[in-house]
Image 1 (cartoon, one colour):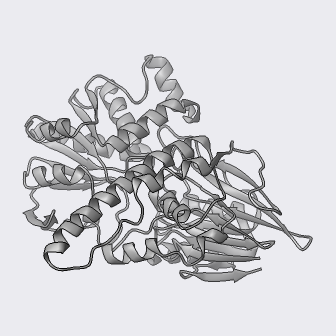
Image 2: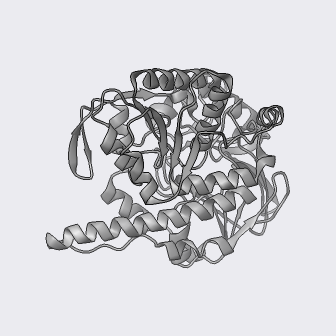
Length: 464
C-alpha cells in the first residue's frame, strides 16, 4: 500500500491524497490549488498521475480547495464514483459550476488583454459545461454507514463539523490479509460553531492524516468572535459607514448571516439592511435550508423559540441580479454587504471593495485565513496601496480581522483530535497547513508523547 501526498502538502490549498492498494487507486479529495496565478494554472491543469487510473474518490466537503479540480479529473478520463454526503454533493455541484463559469470569464478577459500584447492565448482549466459532468458520478453516503469505494477498503464518513455536510473518512484497508486503519480528517471543525454540529473525535487508527491550518494557536471561544463582529458592526454604523465582508459562499456566509440575525433579535445592533451579494452564496443558502436536519441543537432551539428560520429575517436581502448588485454602490446609508469570494480574488466583492475602500467611515472585515499573494492577504496585512482590476486605490477604510470565526479547529482541539486518533503504528501526517502552523503543532504533539508525527512534502510517498 502506498499513500502519495499530492496536494495540501506544506500548504493549505489543493487537498489531494492518493491511496494505492490492492491494485486500485482511491483519491481522498481533489482540490484546487490557490496561489500565484501562473503557478495555480499549471498545478491545477496538470495532475501528477493519470486521472483515468483513479478508481474512486472520497470527498470530505465542498470547499473548492477540496473539491475544485474534480471537473478537470473527469475531463481527463476519470469515470469512477465520487462518495460524499448528500449536502456535500449539492453544495459541490453549485460550487463547481460557479468555478467553471469564473474560469471561463477570467480566461476570456486575459485573452482579450493579452491578444493586444501578442501573448499566447490560454484555455480555462475547465468550463461550466465540464463541471456539469461531475454530478452524475457523485454517490451520496450517509454519515456512519459503511461502504466499499474500492476492493478491500471498508469506509465510513463521520461528522467533521467544518461546513454543512463535511466529513472525516475512516478507512479499514485489507491487503495481503493484513488490516490497516486510516483516518483522514478532511478539515476539522470547532466546538460550539453556529449552525453546525460538533466534530466527532476519531477512532484510534494506525495512521492519521489530519489538517493543521491553525496548528500554531488555539482559537478563542466562538462567542468572543461573535461579540467582536457585533462591536465592529455597531461602531461602523455609528460612523455612518458600511461593513464589507469578503466571505466564502459556503459556510462562512451562512454563519455570519445567522450571527447577525442573533444580534438583531437580541437588540445588540440596530436593524439595518444586510445584503448577501453572491449568486453562489444565495444558492448555497438554499441548500442549507434544505438540509436543516444537519443543524445543531442550539440552532433548532433558536428557530423553535422565535418561530422563525435561522437564515432569513426582516432587512436581509439575498441578491441575485447584477443590476441589484450595482445599485448597492449607489446607496450611502449604513449597511452590511457580504459577498464572495473569501480571499477577495474574484466576483462581485471586488466591485464593493473598489467602491468602498477609500472611505474612512467603512470597515472591511476579514473573517478567514487568506492565502499568500491574494488580495485578501494584502487587505489582512493592511497594505496602504491596493490594486483592484489593475487600478491602485489608497486604503482609508478600517480593516478588522476576526480570526475567531474560523471554521477550522485551533491548536487545542487539533491536539485532542490527534491524541484520539493516535496513529502511532504508521504515524500522524500533518497536511493542509503552512510551516508556521504545522511545525508548532508537530512539536506540541511530540512533546505530548506522540512521537511519530510527520510533515510530508508535496508528492512524497509513504509505503506501508
